[in-house]
Image (cartoon, rainbow, N blue to C red; front, side, top):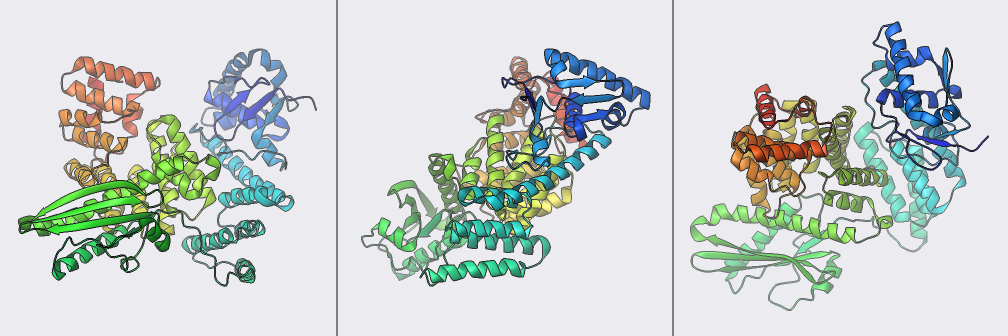
Length: 635
């Protein structure tokens, strides 16, 4: 075999490169599909009839053949001097030179153990909407999926240590319900001395099988767990190894009553208990019970670092309540016990005539702000770690910290969330975040395949199945249903999310972001305000964008523009909304400037496609937005 001159990447995004690594541009989507069909056909060749049927199956026979001839003419021109090395065309057959071309997907199909298992799925960026080609593509993806499993199974037999663990983790990610893969990963962990991880994998497997199939692990899987546990006991531990817990852990110390009487001290303890109870709704936290921290009473000198070690937490919350004749002042502070740093502090004043109504509001604000500050500080910690240290939880944290309104960061977040699911298939939060990621990719890119919505729905269902008590999972399911056009289900799941955790600022914002699409923009604005009231620090870019869009539905264009201008990194969608607001307000020069920015970011901007991706329930809301953008000169 001669040296390969070309590489053809079909897994993930399509790319054809020469020996120097430079990309060879193939502009037409059908010509990229044509090369893919040839590359995956036996002998790297196919008849003209096969190609015409797959790529122009809806055309009459002669028209299909004519279209194929025209495409080949364009393809030969783009290949230029490379054509003779790569492509062979005869009266009835078209072929690629296998001696000059390396195809990533082909090596996997051949179960070449030296092949690099490609990232992504076959032709992930394709969407030709040709039934015959889509059927072919689905079949090829199925074959590659099966071949990837066979390839990993071959590798695992010859590998040891970290390499074997990596291959087993990939195998589990390809088919999480395959118990043999789960057992292989458990054994790989155990062989490497990571018995706690092996036991956690058994728990992940058990939870997944119950949720998806309603069955218990097979006897072989349970026997393997018993063998690992026997090794744990034999090593002298005497009890099950505690499984890793990466979530932020927090304890609320008894509040200082600031010299009050017994009744006042009782109020302080009850107030702390309410905060603990509300914090326990958040699945992203581990919260110690009020009884575990009761011995560390206020009013005495407390060694916070020692208390944190004893309670096995990263963070501590201290508080004080001072009462006067007509005022109750509550002060709260969050402390990073590992670094002895004050993360956040705040004071709240409750007047005697407002005590009852203000009490719940203060509890909600304290809880939501605590969660928000914990998330930010943990994101900052993870961001300082090298990528090789990432666990599933850390992948979720750093992915969440990225601004998914920026193309590059959206792509990076997608990889991190997918990595989290690979590391821990039973991680409900990671599945839920993939839902938001897929929906955003669908909205931002005109050529994004509708399969992204189906994938979002699949991950949303998985998230809810894995943890029916997680409000974020239901919120993700609601958003997926919205983009499927299932309006009643959208409202049902969004309501369920808030019932599970009424203090969750993200769920409140999500509810607002769904209601204006359902024709209830007044209520949407109310929920957006509630999200900010729950946590005054809350205000990601998507929040201001969705608030602005809901105000546009109400015709409050000056307020909408003010909200949209708070977006720190405006996408072309935000620029389009800004342009529409300015056009409605008679700010023509500014409208033109924003419209120009839309075309700068998306040279392929198409108003009809843009409006088509907006999941409004009522046509008059779509028409209003279309008219606003058209007034700004967008078409």
